[in-house]
Length: 361
Image 1 (cartoon, one colour):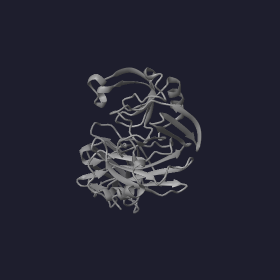
Image 2 (image 1 turned 180 degrees about the vertical axis):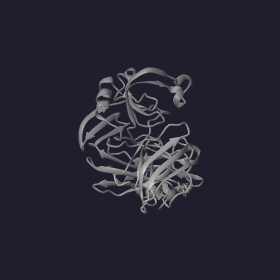
Image 3 (image 1 turned 90 degrees about the vertical axis):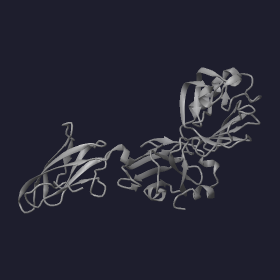
Image 4 (image 1 turned 120 degrees about the vertical axis):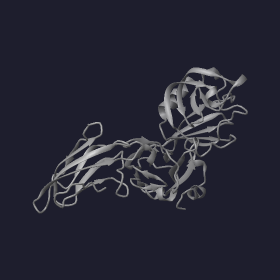
């Protein structure tokens, strides 16, 4: 964006990031650069009178704010310059940042510096409809060391928002270093503009793979390929069968209230349990592995739950302590397979079909 509104000398300044030389893109640090000469001071003031902190580069060729600009805000810029011809000049102008109604952003599921399980796909959910998925996908990348074959695939999230997930062909190997890159700043999406530039590095932890056999009523837990324990469980009873297929640990909480109304179960099968212990969430639709002491005597013998994987309190605590975000839990010999968007169900889609979900396929 050209921020030159002065009358003296030839020196001018530009402000970025901006879209088509017009509105400034919010949510990112602001950069001011001279077209000629050097900056000697820069002051950026919001309409409420607050100034935006920042610092000059040592050579005077740029000024960068310490914080991101706000959304839908108007700022006044005052820049003092020393032009190459020796003239000193002051430039004063104003600019407006885009409002939240004019931008689109993606919420991603990995944190910088985190360690995750071997089955975690990289998932991005967008707050606005994506009209040109191919253009957006070109601005996303996942790289790893060691390198793996992987692909993005688009879907609708459970709330109807556009979502794209990246998974390797096989589970990640423990110790893999992974980097997610997003460079959406200035990208047009219909009448909307992207605002994010991110690099997120994370690491794959040890392999903890659990397999639940609903016929045998067991959960077998393997670490780095070696079975460490087989636990008796009670899974979903008839008409409430536990989802078949691979689910991925979404979260863990030591105690939770479980009210059947939140998952659409009413009438004679309704329940409201106020303090369920050692809860490992597997789907946003309400599938957990948790302590179920009310089913004591049924573990390994009778499937009696409403779809969750029930364990004794001691075994539930053991499992809770063993697994982490991104670890896979695969249910076999059940009925309906968990949907690809019900948590991270990517592993239930064959590789060729998954790749076809890319907008660049």
